[in-house]
Figure 1 (spheres, rainbow, N blue to C red):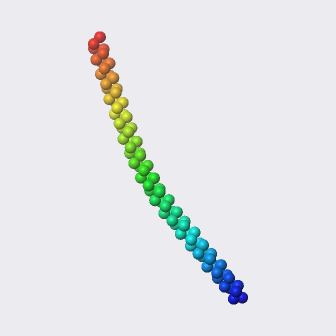
Figure 2 (cartoon, rainbow, N blue to C red):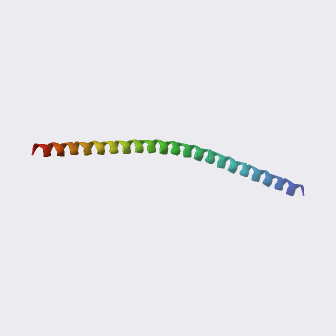
Amino acid sequence: MRMTKHALQGLYDSSIAYGMKKALISQHRKNTMTTRIKELEKENNELSEKCEELEALGTELEQRYKEEDEKLMSDHLLKK
């Protein structure tokens, strides 16, 4: 009887240790993923801002090109 109680106590202690180990590993993974998510969100925001800047620059360049083209066309028509 003592042997059975001692064996069961050992099994219980081993199970508790295993559960604690798994809980710690899960918590570590969760913290790692949370950090990675924050990094990716920051990178996403930076890339979105860069994209908006480039779109604005593209629009500005298109406008300049259009104005130059209109000016050249009007100068060309005036010369004729």
